[in-house]
Image 1: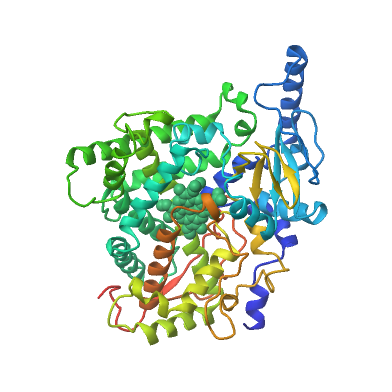
Image 2 (image 1 turned 180 degrees about the horizontal axis):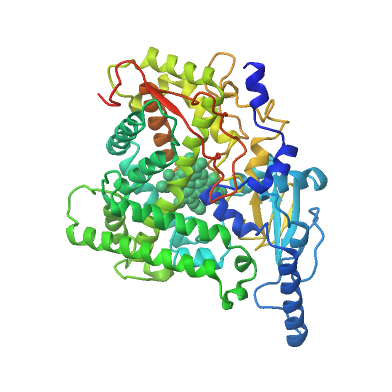
Length: 549
Ligand code: HEM
């Protein structure tokens, strides 16, 4: 890499701090963060909460139900106040992944804090993360119950926010099998993604040599994949139903991102809350659309192969218990509510994550034209320009895989994983951890740990190749998590990232518009940790003038 490029590289953490006001996290990540702590509430609000709760406690002379923290262990812990816990030490504008990374320098890689009344352990290195996610994965496979996620998921009828239980396991297995049906072993998913790739390429190439923001087209393409996968709908650019899906998804993400305090102090939901009201409105629109799709699917369900994920879930749930009811409890098996929440989650968890990863990688390619050229040389050599790329080309395109991995390392879409909880008394790093403790895994600090990554702020795909040019996966690279709570959509996401990027780079080249600055790599505070909007110019590569064969 030349000096210029090196200077443009990701700035070190101190610069992030100065810029932290501009930072955010991806939809799921941001949503996760708001459950972690609302990092920008003013001290006056904290003071008011403190006084109100203190007075209430004095009057009732007992603590609020369900808020007693588990006994504290030997893990270094931030200071705390009654009721507020360590929140006063977490305020300000630094986002959690950066703040935790900074705190880990003072307290060590494993430290604890109190989010209001909730004793929470923060894991910042990969050894402890592997203990939590893998070695003692089952001990830590629980999820805390929270006001916003309970609303979003009909009290945990989804996968991501549901607590560990036999029903959750059954549900997760059903979803996993349904994904497998359309992914590994069949060409269905490839066909779905490739048809979206064709429209994306045509759309990007139609913008010609003018600089334009690729974000709306990429988000639409990924949303379209999920719509096709979940309920077999194919939408043209500008379709009203597709716009509705994108709108309510954005609304949910945005309001969840603004949530926060109510997830730490659930009693606050009795006060008027604009964000919660908007969240409820968006959920109503979402549920109306998905219920209509579900009813249509039930009416046309046949004995043949499932047409899409909804079909597969409907067929699968029949064998899962007395699953014909429209809402249910543990002993009712998988219900319609579970099917509906799974479909909703495919959008919530599957769109922003994948599209943001693609946009980060494109942003880094604009900074590193030499990386783009190397991927294109690999594509020319192993695929050529006479046919489209397909899944079976993946093994012949190791460098492209490394570029994807490096994008996910340097900008993990979930810089802090969804909170885990201890299901039982257990331990991390030899320290005992009581049942009910919340555990946050800071993937950002693991992916930027200088002990394991040479120049971690540098975009360098070669770190995923060994001396013989063979792919390697370092043990501290965990973009999808690991263990019982590993991302259900990992293989789908990997397939999408591979097919989208390989096809785009086979068919066109990306560059910055003349005179435009390179994309800002620090991200911005919005709904997601995304690159600030940037512009690209695309030019067709030989033989691909119209974007498709
Ligand atoms: C680049 C794309 C993606 C990335 C980087 C990603 C990453 C992650 C991460 C880090 C987790 C949390 C693991 C934990 O809590 O320990 C997660 C969970 C999850 N993801 Fe993904 N994800 C991606 C795409 C998808 C897609 C496409 C889907 C489905 C359509 C999906 C569905 C889920 C679900 C359902 C969970 C919750 C799993 C559980 O709690 O058991 N993800 N993902």
